[in-house]
Image 1 (tube, one colour):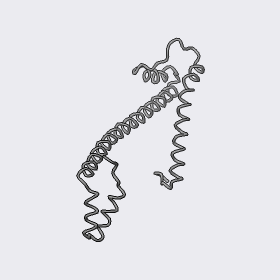
Image 2 (cartoon, rainbow, N blue to C red; image 1 turned 180 degrees about the vertical axis):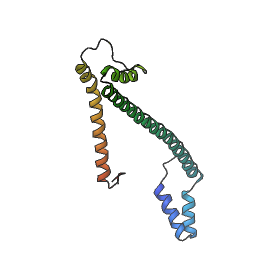
Image 3 (cartoon, helix red, strand yellow; image 1 turned 90 degrees about the vertical axis):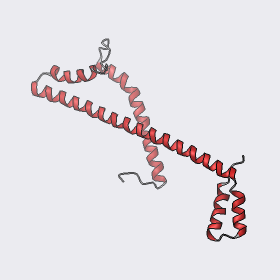
Image 4 (cartoon, helix red, strand yellow; image 1 turned 30 degrees about the vertical axis):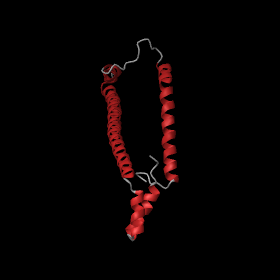
Length: 156
């Protein structure tokens, strides 16, 4: 089947919407064949299926985002509690227990062979920082493209 000429269909429909002459009705009928209607229905069904998939994916991503936000909040809270514990008791080990327990539970403690905290941090943070910078660049580019297109961004 040949490609659907949407513009021709639209023009024929608009023409009979204004004045439905026999010639315009015939021209419309010639363009709206059973094959065209079936093709349009197939396209609509595919679009609706894709829309449902995207909505499901969007819900999943939104919930992952919420989960990460909560995890980050929890980790900040743990670090704050560790500082409070240390300041209240003067015992840094007691404060560190908050952080240790948070890492130990899900198995996120560093390998026991690690001895240089700064070297460990630098090594582990470099790829994270690189990915964060790439994300920041992407968000900035998106923002600039939206601004150039005249799209208002939430909060502006």
